[in-house]
Image 1 (tube, rainbow, N blue to C red):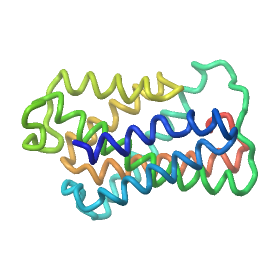
Image 2: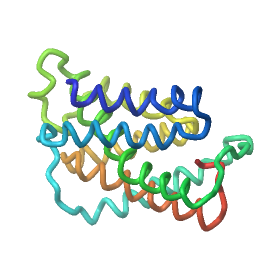
Image 3: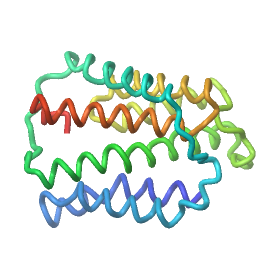
Length: 195
């Protein structure tokens, strides 16, 4: 359980804590801390089978369209992101590699199975459906994002994709493609408010 909880806790709390003391370094610290934790536990993620899945590109593009398309629900955000090259590189890497990996591992590999059978969650197959695990993981994923309406919709898409593929690495790839497309879009259009 710690292989999911420790990286996720670092991912969730590092940025606000570091930003409190060193304003502007939170995202970098979060990315590095989470990456180190994921690297430390990497061999323990037996459910990850490194295999390219072309369908993940399509799902990632769909997630991007939903994320940007639902922006009309929100009042225009004030940009706090400073678009200098170092920040852009850190965001690219952090969102495409680190966020995609930890959010999928925690939500759809650990939490989904834990809800189904807390005592023997590791025995629950990846992508096993239950209404309660579907609902809770969508809500957790959705409300963990400041654009929670889009987060809920994306949570549904990624859950359905996992049920179809039964492969967590396909979900990581789809999430990574979505974040990569979003990062390119943000950079090209100067839509920094997404970050």
